[in-house]
Image: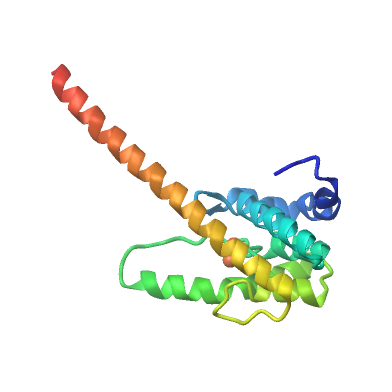
Length: 169
Ligand SMILES: [Fe+2]
Ligand SMILES: [Fe+2]
């Protein structure tokens, strides 16, 4: 993100500096934190919305708050895993919206962005919501891909070390 992008920062700063928003730094998401994820989604969505002449201010605010669910999603492998994933996918936009409304005053576009970013679970009403929903998906795949690459590289390194250790002994 270009920190000298003053237009983005002017809108984003009051939210980013809020103490509740800062809590997202400590919640893991994809390959990083929710905080890093929402900043990336907000910035990329802003670039698209700005270029297309959409409401880029609401795009930034909605995107920053789209994953403001503030809980850790723990995965326990087993039969319950799929039910838990389904519940999280379906419910976290509602929790995010409830939290966002507790701390910030939102317009209709911003509410729609947050509530409907998990398309096709809910159908977005505004073009800004479509932008955020697609950017979110694109970045989620990118972030998971990075995570998977890291996992494979670590596994490779582990097995390489084992071979090295065997050679030493
Ligand atoms: Fe989400
Ligand atoms: Fe997201």
